[in-house]
Amino acid sequence: MEKRNAAVAVIGAPAIYIGGEIAEEFAAEGFTVFAGRRDGAKLEPLVKEIEASGGTIVARTLDARKEDEVAAFLNDADKHAPLEVCIFNVGANVNFPILETTDRVFRKVWKWPAGPASWQDVNQRA
Image (tube, rainbow, N blue to C red):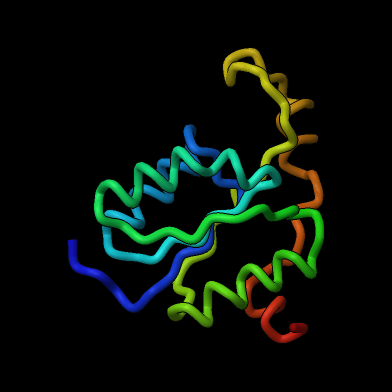
């Protein structure tokens, strides 16, 4: 793996499922991964997986509902290496199999306030 001078921020990065898979893919491409979730201790399996494969990851507790925390998280990633990608993968802790999720539930989950509109917007306010 060739290391890049680039960072990716994954907000909502469970050790398994889509957020973790996204983090692993970017790490495999040489990005430094900044992974955040409400319970940062649960990122330990993801940290071990990425580091075992030679990747670089910075994992920490992050509440995506708090704009100041998100701004600090993104700024820290950008200070480490230019932030090229931001994945906002937060959920609403709705545990329905996709085939059992009604249209109403799906709309409510994805209309949930998702924090800042863009990295540029956060960067300008920080």
